[in-house]
Every structure is written in structure tokens, then in C-alpha cells.
Image (cartoon, rainbow, N blue to C red; front, side):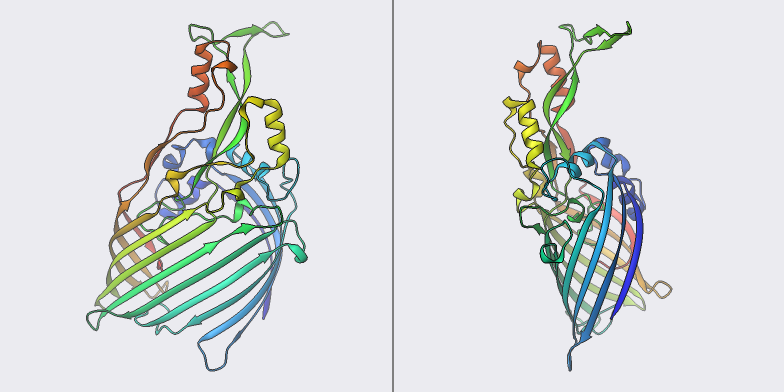
Length: 400
């Protein structure tokens, strides 16, 4: 039994966080999607957790129960984050979400079982953990979500005494209920040495487009900016509002990853492992990307020809399964009590595509063809999404 109290502040930058964890500059990779298309934000949170657990008699199993309460404030830093956090219907408000005072009250029962023969270098046994986090309803707060998770690993002898076969399966799911969708900051991202090793950290996520409005310059027939004289006598560009879609990487609501390793102990703390990883991170329930009804009403009033629906548009190509296979050299370091790993990974299944944003502003919106072409270049240009086929990487810790 125990308790904890916390206060935290975190500045999240998708490209920077992946770069820090990978030990390489991945910011240009993320910026390929567009700097304003990243979910960068600042968050402040405070809260407490109460927890208790008990070993079951004559068993390797343990049951537990925890309760937590968190108050969180979110400050979006990019256009994508602002559209996503303010207008996703996770607080069930008619207008923009109030991103201050997001209260999550949750209870989480858990079960664990562990019969492995070693916490660091297991050669036999099974490890199981399962938990269910339930937030909202009679517990209070303004977030309603249900999040189950199951994690299973099994180890057995290989073809020779110093060989070990390891298998791992992790499944997670999150959904909202009671007219609310799951909070955007609780969704899942995949990729990196912790799940599918051949992909960059946290880059495996569905890509979606949220309805919004944009501003473009009107052009003359020859392609030069159309200008008008302002009240102070200066010339300014003529602009107009048009319906458009904003790219977001919302994370998935269904996360399933499987790992297989054949480990060969070479000598002492050194092990060579052949591995195969497969994972899918997708939006199984696209209705969980519902926008606030007030936002859709405002957009359809402003742009009636667009006929926006209240859900985001998902790029299906980004939801496919990813696989990775390769060789990994593991050296157990007593100082860290974790293995240092160097591995090469080849990715049989990747996504190499150009993601096309939906185009809702047709030629009739614009005074001439030059202005229409300019709007397509601004809001309708295909966005490259090009994953690498192979990677070398070093890290500390285990995949499972």
C-alpha cells in the first residue's frame, strides 16, 4: 500500500522527443509533414495516486488496485495541436474545449503473474500483466475513458542448452463513453526499440485530417498577388477564407505488437538474438475522432458547400501493419543492470506514399484560375510519408 503526490510541467515536441530517445536528429524527418502539422504542446499537471497490492497465496500472482486524480492544463503550440485539442469532442462541450482544468478521476484494478527464472536474462517461464483503467462516471472528473491492457511474455529453451526462445504480445485499447471520446493525450504511438525496432520512435501513428478553415491570397490572372489599398494608404494582399482540412497525427486507439526472439548466449554477458517484430497502431473506432458539434455547425454555416461531417478523415495507408526483422547484439552491463544493444533491422512492410489532403474548395470559390491553383498548392498539396527500409541503432534496455 502506498501513495504519491506529483506536480509536473512538460513541453512536448514530437521531433525533439524522438531525437532525444533515438540519439539522432529526427527533427527534419518530422518536419517533412510540416512544422505546423506536429502535435507540439506544453502541459502542466498535478494530482495524486493511491495504490495497494497483495500476493496470492502459493502462487506467482499478485493483484492490485489504484486510484488517481489528475488536473491538467494543455497549451497547444502548433496549428495542428490547437485544432486537435480544442475541437476534439473529449469534454462534450458545444464550443471549443477549455484546455485548463482537465480533470481525470480513475480507478485501475490489475493482475500480474511472473514465473520467469531471471528478471534480466530469462530463459524459461511466463510473465503476464493485465489492467483496466476506468475514468469518469461516478468517479467524477470531466474525462470519460476505458483503457484495458494485456502484456504476455513466454520464454523456453531453444534447440540447444544455451539457446532461448522468447515470445511477447502486448495489446492496448482506449475508448471514450457517455458521448465523449478518449482524450487526445492518452492515445498510442508506436515505433522504436521498445516495440517495432526498425522504425523511428513514435512515428507509427494514423494520419488524419480535421475539418477547418484557411486563408489564402487572391492572385491576378498572371499569378501576381492581388492587392488593395488599406485605410493607412499602404498596399496589402487581398485574402479570402476557404474550407480546408488540417493534418494531424492523433495516435491510435488500438495498439497490438508481437515480438519473437531467438537468443544465443555466446559467452558471459554477451548474447546474439535474431528477432522479428510486428505491430499495428490504428483507429479502429473512427467515431472516436468526433469533433465538437458547435465547431461543425460553425464551419458548415461559414462554408455550406463543404458539407463537413463531424469526424476526421483518416488516411488508410498509414494504418497498415508494420514488420521488422534483424539481428541484435546484447551485452548485459552490471552498472545499469540492463543490456546494451546494437542491432540492424530490415522492415519488410513499410509505408512509402504521398498523403493527399481532402480538397473541398472547388473552382467556384475563386475569382480566377490562378487563385484556385494557389489554394491547391497551399492546402491541397500531397504530403510525403516515406518510411525507411532498414536502420542501425544502439540503445539500453530490453524490448521485452
